[in-house]
Every structure is written in C-alpha cells, then in structure tokens.
Length: 99
Image: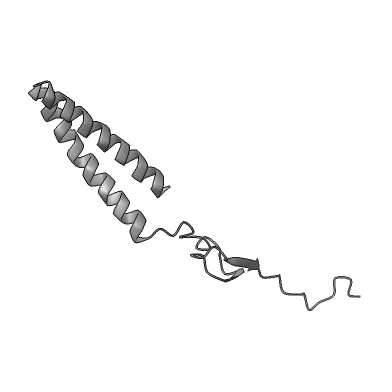
C-alpha cells in the first residue's frame, strides 16, 4: 500500500513541476505560481512517503498482530516465513456420556 502512495504522489509531483515549467516558458506567471505552490506539498509528501517506505519496507508488518493468544507463531514475518498454528481446545476431563 505504501508503494502506491509513493508512486501516486511522485507522479502528481512530477506533473505539477512539468506544468509549472511549461507555464514559466510561456510567461504565464499566474499559472506558474499556482503549479509551483502546488508542487511543493506534493514533493514533500512524495519524499516523506518514500522515506517511510525505505525506512520500514516490511510488507508483513502487522501480520500476526491481530491474532489473539489462541495462536502460536514462529518464524520471521520480515523474511516471509511466518507460520502460525491455532492452539487446540483443551480436552475435557469429563466424558460426555458419564452415567
């Protein structure tokens, strides 16, 4: 999901910069200022999303976090070899058909 944010913000920032440069070349200062101001938060957002993605690129982050105490997990979620097994219910000490 993070990679989609990085790609989307990067494309939007690139388009805003392109449009700002185009407006500057045509001496349309009002349009240039609009796209230049729009590109600043997009570049900052794309940079922050990229930094967050490369700072923690673990796609399995949170796997196993939603499991309750009835599960036993082993392995590494970061390496993709996380194995979780549900604990079986304790056997009843009383037989069902006790007379």
